Length: 261
Image (tube, rainbow, N blue to C red; front, side, top):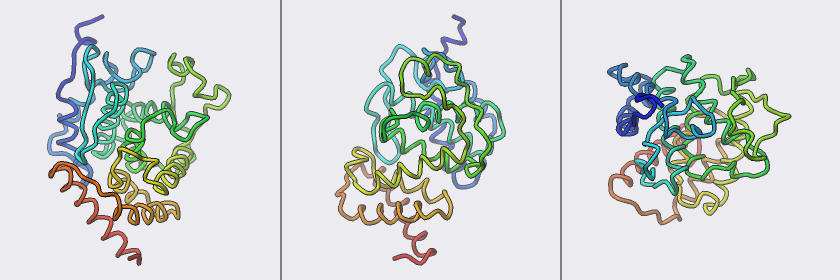
């Protein structure tokens, strides 16, 4: 294995989280070379799915450590696998938000994320933690083609997709729209009962939903989230509560503009 393949990327999550607010709110970053640094972590050892053949995921942790991370909203990853996948999602959403949706590397990263979550069969949890699925909502929110019926160029050749019966080998053609539909169905399901997204702040679900357009399920899910938010008794460090309060303000503004109280 080459020195490059062994190279860890200890700072890429910190960089992605630092770039995220500007990319999220303005669709750009001050220094595009920062995005190159994120892209350089693609396909390296330690990336989610790397051991079973995926090569478009981002390596956010060395392969020989127990990966863990915390989100700005206060949640913590629950396992090594979950942390590695969430790290991949954090980098992918930042690159999408910053305007690299036409870059084949970013498209491949998005497709790999979709393939190991929203394309699975036989279970509403989609073989990923609720926290990982909540973070992955941003990929749909930031995908400019999320309503398109154009097929996603998912690479099904990795051994990952032959190790389990989570995937239907006879049905491997998914469009951007198909993924969006599965995402919205899941969001409707989990916002109806807070226990279905245990360990995930309702505000982590809310913010990407605010970007998903005028769909009746979006409105219903946001209404359910707003109703639940008053009774959750959520507690977190002050910085996380400030982040949640920022999102609560966005939801109040959204509801006011759309004629809801």
